[in-house]
Length: 333
Image (cartoon, rainbow, N blue to C red; front, side, top):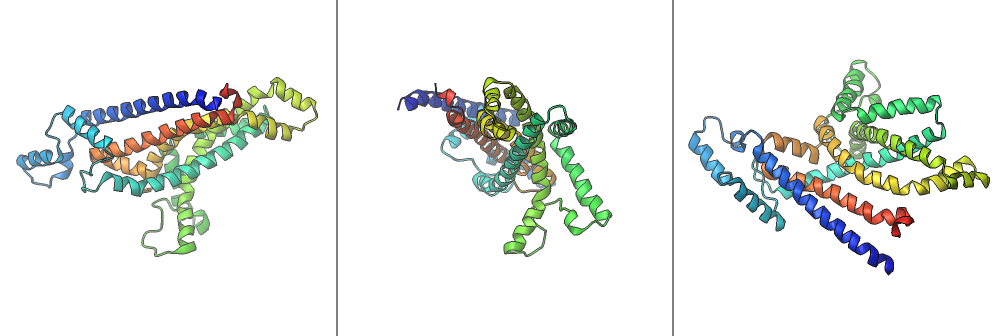
C-alpha cells in the first residue's frame, strides 16, 4: 500500500503534464495550419466559380470567422469528443481515422517489435564481440540505417526489389510488390488473401524495422559495454557463470529499464517514419491520410490525425513511466 501512495501522486503529475503537452501540441498545430499559405476553398470550388462562390464556401466551412473564434469552436468540439467533418468529402473525421488507424497500428507495431528483437540481438552480439570485424560491420550497417531518411531507403527498396527484379526476370518470390496492401483487382479470400497481404507488407515492414533496429542496436551495444565492467557482472563471472548465462540472466535483467524507456521514445520515430513509408507504398494508414489532408488543406482531418498521433505518443510514455518500477525495482524507492 505504501508503494501505491508514493507512486499515485507521481502518476497524477505525469498525467497532468501529458494533458498540458497534448493541448500545446494541438494548439501549435492549429496555429501553424492557419499560418501556412493556401486556402482550402481553392481546392474545393469547381473550375470557373466566381468570387461569391468562394466567399459562400468559406462561410459554410466557418473560415470567414477570426482565428480566435475558429480555435474556440474547435476546442469546444474537441472537449465533447467531436473531431468535425472533412472539408473534402464531408465524412466524419472519426470514421476516416477509424479506417486508417488499424493499418498504421499493424504496420508500426510489427515493425517496432521486429526492430527491437533484431536490434537487441545485434547490440548484444556487438558487445560480446567488441573490436571484432563483425562488430565493425554491424556498427557501419546500424549507423547507415539509423541515419538514412525513410523515403530515400523506401525508394531504393522499390527500385531494387520491384523494378530491377522484374526487369531482370528474377523468380516471382523475389519480385516484391511496391504499391498498396493487396493486389488490385484480385478477388482473394482466406489463406490466399492473407498471403497476398503478407507479401505486400514485406517491403514497408522491413524498411521501418531496419531503420529502428539500427538505433536500438547502437543503444544496446553502448549500454551493454557500460554494464560489462560493473561489479555485479564481474561477480557473476567469478562464480563460474558462462558468458551466455551472464548476458541472458544478469545483463538483460538490468537493461530492462533503459530498453523500456527506449521503446516509448521510439514510438514517435516509428509514427514519423510511417508517414513517409505509407505515402511511398500507398498504404491507406494514418500517415498517408495526414499527408493527403495537408496537401488539400483539410484542416479537420489534419487536426484529428495530429490528435491521434500525440495521444499515442503520450500514452506510450505514460505506460513506460508506470511500468518503470517493474523494470527497475530501485525506482520504487
